[in-house]
Image 1: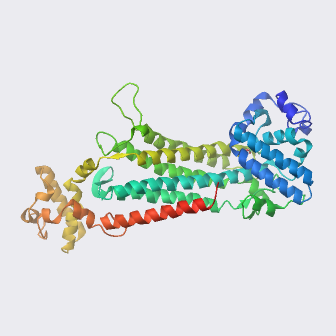
Image 2: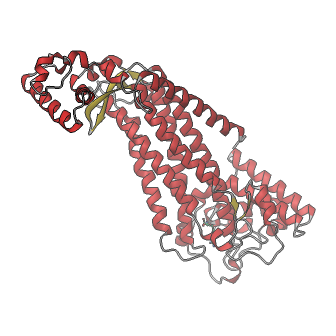
Image 3: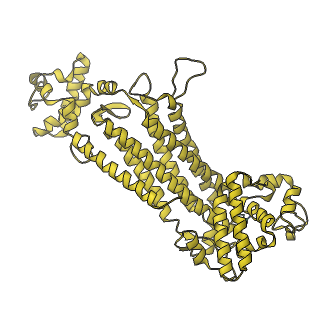
Length: 485
Ligand code: ARG
């Protein structure tokens, strides 16, 4: 226990000096326990939200007649001062005071004296921390939503540049059918759009304020929970005080949405890694988004997408951490719940950083359109179309597939270009082939004939680009309209 902490909290602490709960204690806390249980080195991330919550609580206490106007004014001024100290870095956090809540309260006592002791009226750290966390999650989910839409905008812009860039689409990482690069990247625009929606949905469930739930059973004091709920931007108070202090499913949902988004990001990252190999040679990362080797002077390494791929391990781990912490916890608050914070903060910043560097890497990526087209020229990518030509002649698809399979086998064996086969060559495999392969098959036809909704035909993709552009713009505008975070 530092003297500083003792001095700060004045009378509080009884024989466990410095502790607001020290009254019934006869001995000091062991140093190892203080280190073990302190959370202020990470829950300082809640400082801003904690002060917001305290400001709302102070105003409410005054309205409820539990504070005088002078006390309220002193508390508000003190809290605002602490907010400024946090912003300019002059607020010194003391681990002996356990967490951010007690650090703020202790500093408040230094600043405003006895009035500080009234701020905790009708409030427990249990409802306080639950409230802070929801406020934090609201901001973090909104930031994630915005970051995802910003990445979507970058992908949409790059896709629009590459409406006529053709590359093989893959299944099993084997060349499958030709697609437009725009179509390929718009797939990620869809994926990240759903990720953004998950955060938005979550925000829609962060609407009830835990403040006023007390330690677990509410309060005997005439608190105005409706008032604090509104002050903090919630719709209403939570409906059950025990649920309010015991639940962390909003955190779990945030971690799940973050893990899913990270996993989807890691797939885009993996393609950047693969595509920038000499073997693919489809893209080159800008120097600003690549790194060199300390040993091999020729190397340009895709560390940025590799790290994005690797970070998915962290965010998945964070989800599993909190699921495991929560499993089997009896109601209501248990100190285990303090373990919710590091995974949540870590996932929030990890996703934010991944989105930022991925947006930058995609925005600056050099695309080798000739290499892509060369790879897409592989005539075998048109084999399905040959089978579908037979289907148009009335042949059952299974029968057509089998016949074209034999044609392909023949071409592989004799090292022939599928497109070079004459009508007669083809008819040796099935009597219904209507024309020479060269007349039935081409890369352009393969793309253009896929004009169903969701397909890779030029007009279809052009329309999809336009729809994506409008939708992303509307999403970003809706976020802007919510005002500053
Ligand atoms: N630091 C604590 C947490 O994060 C705050 C709540 C402490 N409550 C308590 N009953 N010890 O969970």
